[in-house]
Image 1: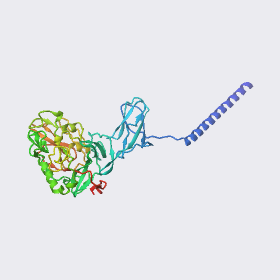
Image 2: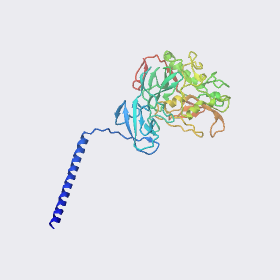
Image 3: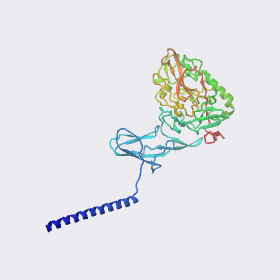
Image 4: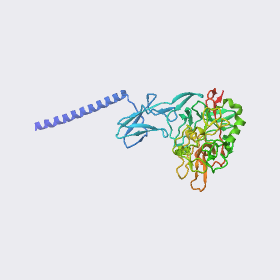
Length: 442
């Protein structure tokens, strides 16, 4: 009995000792963990919603100017995605969706993939307007770029591409730094041409906001031409039976020339006479035997709109309208003034892809800097054919709708006139391009 009692007492003591030791270890562990946490340094990264090909855990870290940051830069902040230096683990790779402003991860096959994203400053270039920050990436031209709910992309700034004469810098989106006051009139800068000259579009006798509805933003209205029953009537100048003829002046050209004589002739020393205006009449697939009379014809401007692939290179020199002293183009103009092209409109922010084979879908760009609340003509022809749901043959050209979309119409329709000029590259320019402090010739 004594031995049994002794064993019971020892078992109790052993249990108490084990419990005590466990408590000591637990308290000690908590103490050391807390102490370590107080001195531990660690990096914290935000996780954003990226577009991926398949399910899987993925997280992003961001470097701006090669410095680790907690958040990626905002859209239109002056930074662009550095695809060359960005990378992902697990053999995945990342590209950037500029329209939606988010990364798209490809080849994602494993979980816990880490993508390191680098961002760099936009390029700075010297120009006749001074130093400009320029985006080098190519936008998605299927999407309209502006600052309202109708736009799928909210890009805003100066971008670069090439034209007939070299690298050109164009304004895109709802920019507010391309106002120019010249000849006691207001203009908006479309782009700096490849030869350094400044391309302006008329914008009124007073300054207007982006998308502001006003007839003051055009010099008046006009038909493009007197008839629509011959392919020649798509021409800013035309000759019967000649696809690229320049023998006859269109109605709208006559109105634009009159504006030059009345408002700009005394400022001729500032206006460039070498750059031209492209009224592209190159036919689709370079078809033979079309572009004249009532031959069914589609011009390449149609294709560029359908495929959302604008170009500032004028394919045929016979359609580059220039004055006789120019070193390029057809030298058929009497005044160095013209109209905007649909390609320039797409570069400026209006989405393409509007013709689907049945009906026109006209993406709105209500807050774009070119949108005036009125319909105005461009230089770009579409074609000559029997329109959908119609029975008669007609030619059509592109106009820009009151809400900023790309649309087509007969040349006999009365639409707004917005002249375009080019200023010389050697001018001294003051101002910063805002409505309050527009660019001016010094």
